[in-house]
Image 1 (cartoon, rainbow, N blue to C red):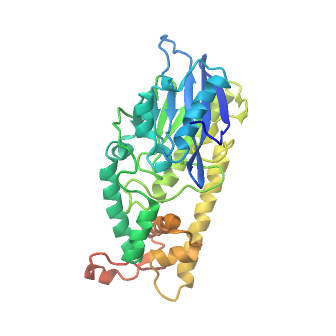
Image 2: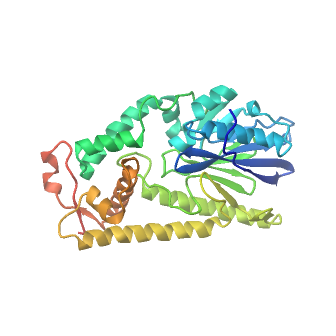
Image 3: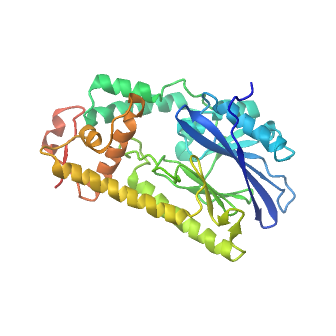
Length: 369
């Protein structure tokens, strides 16, 4: 069925040591309120003469119009750009990370295209055993919400509205484990950048960085507390941003030695999984760092003004405007991630530590020490 809302496809081209590579950035409506992008990578054969396997980066949500958006975009690569390519030429799908809007469509899309899936080992289990991970994470959500000060009935509603439920996503085997520093087919360099998810990856291709959700052009990436999802957390995210700047500066130096300019500006160019292309990665990272400092300062101010120790739910309510249930988990997780970070550095303390052993799921309350 044709997509009633056909999105444009962006084309980026680069010369990688005499090997022409094309990246097609395809927009897809991953959720009713959220658009995202997948990228198709095509390239000339390598020096050994072996053809490059057409590679899709991310797979959309698999819901709503997202699958049709992707297939429509893949078809445009042939009809609008003249590539000798059809969608079923895709041989593999590499995942930046395993959040619904990026991996939800991987199972069905890989089956339809007969393409193998690649992911980082820390995220791979979410793909190949989705029901198991959904049940495990929902149990963790219930504990987290209770300890954040959310009552049981509201907690159930938040989890149901968030939608991480068994059966929502089709599990699929992960045929390839992608590891930090490897260079796939001499063209796609893999960078492990955890924080937003345990196995988050960025992909370096010539002067371009495919960023997933590590860095966005307008908004701040969602923060999760590592006590809820091990391998995440603000500390890891900030370290990954530092790593990204180092990668970008190395790419910039290399590009300047060879002319430096891409068709849209000075390398490197960031292609995030949402929002606009990023032309100056270090500058955007510094803006994100300032935002995190402001939010942490705001949280400390909330605790400073409070006349009693606050739980996570109270902190989040004073920091952010409450939205619908489906989005309530995000500010709670953000506040918890910042409390966790500030507690690690001694800026925040648990006020009711002496009574924590009195309950199976105690509500933690925080103060400025």
